[in-house]
Length: 132
Image (tube, rainbow, N blue to C red):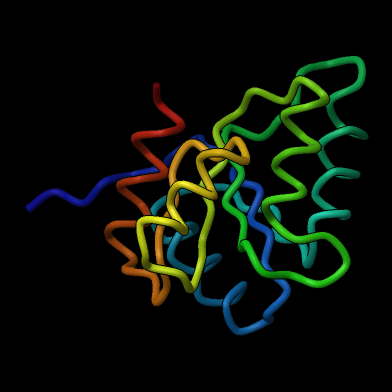
C-alpha cells in the first residue's frame, strides 16, 4: 500500500498543547510537509497577515485545534474568512458529534477531524484539501 505524500506542502498547524504539536508535526513532516507550528489563533492570524501582504500566503492549508486559549479555532477561522483568506482550513476537535462538524463548517472550515487523530487519515485529508 502506497502512503500519501505531502511533499512541497506548507502547513500552518495551530494547537495550544505542546504534546499535540509534537505528534501532529511529526506525522506531517514524515509525510514530507513543511510545518509551521503555532500555539493559538492570534498567532495564526498574525502569521497569515504578515506573510500574506502584499504577496499571497505561503501556506497551502491551515490545520487548527478548535479549543485554544487567547483565540479559539472557530473564531480564528471566522476572522480569516472575513479577511478574505481562502486557503483550506482543517479543524481538529475533541467533539465527534454531527453538531460539532456543522459548527466547524459554519465557521468556514473546509473539513474537520475528531481527536484522537489518526495519522493516516490526517495526511489523506490534508492532501485532499490542499490539492483541490
